[in-house]
Amino acid sequence: MPYLTPTGTVRRTSGAEQLGFGVPGYAHPLLAPTEWAELVRPGTPLHWAVLNIDSGPGARPDPHCLEAAGRLRNARERAVHGDAPQDSVRAAGGRLLGHLDLAFGSRSFGELIADAQSFLDWYRVDGFYLGRCPAGRAGLPAVRRLTSTLATLLEHGDRGEGTGPLVLGLGTHPHPGYAEAADQLVTFSGPWTDYRWSQVAEWTAAYPPERFAHFVHGVPRTHLEEAMRIARWQGAGTIFFTDRDDRHGQTDPFAALPSYWDEIVSRIGPGISE
Image 1 (tube, rainbow, N blue to C red):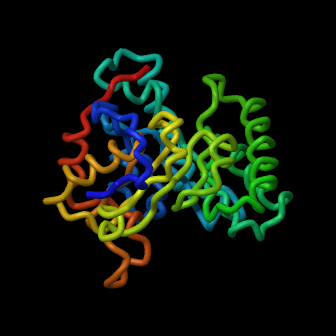
Image 2: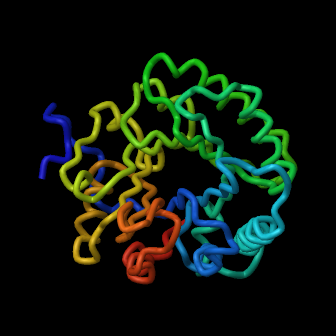
């Protein structure tokens, strides 16, 4: 399968890298209690999960989201400070990210910073997921300005354990300059029918797998191993695969657990924290 652009570049991965989950945004905790509960199950190889109330933090603190955020934060604190070696992967992950909708560059800097501050004040998020991020050269200066300011806000927060990542929700390979604008880039978000024949930009080979994430919907259970092999070969360290799709009334295929959640957790394993 042609997973690489035909440049002759040898991919950096040997297939041994540890994958983990990035959850792009489950449904509201009141509607998806099982999904949110799974995030704090010991041994789940969770890198981060996105909290999205209303394309952002909403107008006021939501008690159900406050509870879900608190459970994830407490699980991380237990993993870091408690006696739970089987859950050591979450000592390096399990971060909660606030969702900021960039609307492909049409939202103002002030609006986005106000949303970020609300996430920090209300939910004590560890980082941010920048949804609908522009990917072209023209949008890069504004994204750099935003991520630099967000990093400063996070550095002056009260979490005391360092800060979580800034993730660009691109869904495609952007201009290479975006690689230096954030901690992680989502370079694929789409259906399995596209992913299994997808190619990766040559410039990504200069970066380690933890810099890239892939979200794929409509992945059949019988193709899980193939999907994970593609992710490793293309150099993605964070994934979310689901057999749900964007048809049959399922407007957001990533809003709920895949039917094979337990199997994919088992396949990836608990991981090893660094």
